[in-house]
Length: 319
Ligand code: CP
Image (spheres, protein in one colour):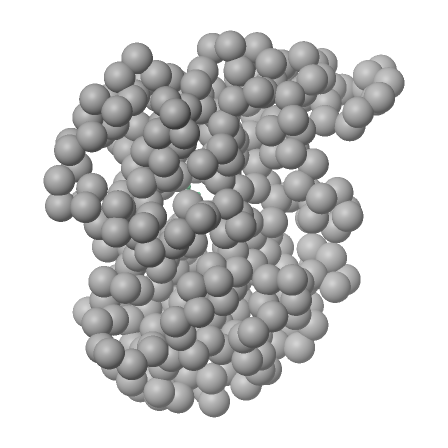
């Protein structure tokens, strides 16, 4: 595996999941695989789970993981080719990335979208420029449009919590929020559930919150949350801002918060959220603190997903 920025980079999902679950059983089984190798982790935005779980995963593989908060400590980077750098940006990615390629064996990048310019965000300019210029494998720690380490974790968690022979009914439901959030987690979850192909998949959101059909194609999409929740085995709660009229909050109806009453419509569903979560805005306390919630187990699984991905990259480097 030379890059991990989307579901398209996964050759065999079942193999990746099986490896992650083996690491969960025996975390240090490949503790020599990354010996002498370094993972550079660049954060252009804040993170707790992605940063720490990926560091733990790297350490489990014997790698050294070095974190650099670009947004806080680094020079302001320019990403546009042929830019005239007379503004606020100090260093071009074309100059910075090859140096990082010399310091590290694998590069992790965390970026967010601007939510101002859909074309720029959906072209994934930042992460693609790092891939172009770093010359080493790049793993997305969340990009402008996708969050593949989160989504791999989500599929692993669904596999663990739903063990019946039939396909689960999975509902991705929009929830209110106080500020416009990226579509990354929702896009990515849709891409991976569709790619996995082992679920009845429903996406529920208010009008005007349609996601990019490149990711949702294959899912049943509805504006009726209660109907969507009927018989659900898994409910994934997430806010996102508008995609069509990009980066806006239109409806922010508190009725879309997942409450105990809404959960009663489901088939004793397990409730997921990528975290961080706005309590009593996206999900009520009574749901988050109930036995239905698997958010802690889900976040804990981030380590094994990251470890499986890093291991595949290390094997590619060694081959
Ligand atoms: N879910 C997730 O990516 O969490 P962080 O923003 O804390 O990394």
